[in-house]
Length: 73
Image (cartoon, rainbow, N blue to C red; front, side, top):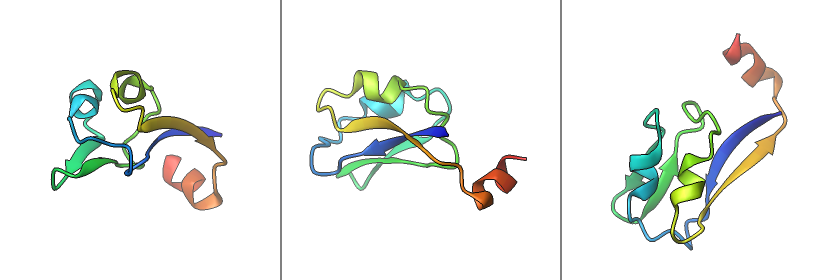
């Protein structure tokens, strides 16, 4: 299992707090509309989730697929 951030676009207010909180730059705000998390960069630390005033970000666990496992090696 790996943890990754997921954005509920309908709740996001595009404030940018998550962008500032991300220690590796995995979060951006797309065209001023909503946050986007790059799953290839996200380390699942939860900092974006903790600072989101709208509660639109959730850190979720998911199964590691074979293709993901090869990328991680």
